[in-house]
Image (cartoon, rainbow, N blue to C red; front, side, top):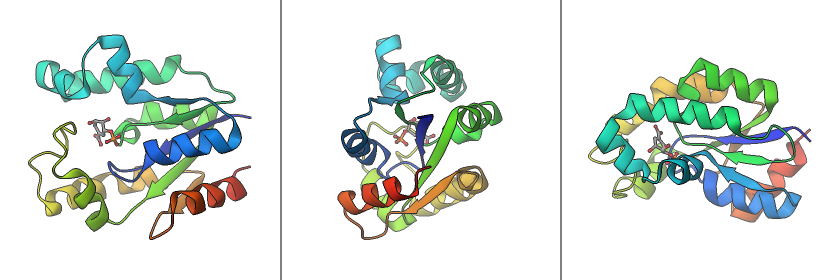
Length: 164
Ligand code: S3P
């Protein structure tokens, strides 16, 4: 099976749902942010603070290129879709599943999280406009899942039914 990439805005549930999907499909789950942190020996927050976002984006692309393209679930950072190079790699290597949650839900989940440098100190409106600036990139996916009020089990079931 070709790689499954989970994309979506911060707080959409990529990590939690990716882990559950991995259990259901008996596939390993690799998280791009965790791989970057392991390789750099720094947290995402520290990388942003010490080197800035542009450098983080380079690391993100570098990591994405090194990951397997078969029999794996790859959960991605919310900004992975910004770069065309990343979008093309994901499209060529596998299926992209977009997880979508409403901005109110996302805001509640992430606005107070000190470990999300892109979200901290942003108002709901600022996050909404960041989301809008990325929307068309997110929507260029294989499968879009509306998370709504569904449970993790329901979301994963829905995904499995729609995977090719
Ligand atoms: C980012 C999302 C984060 C992380 C970094 C940048 C973004 O991942 O990669 O803080 O630009 O949306 P999550 O989507 O897992 O929060």
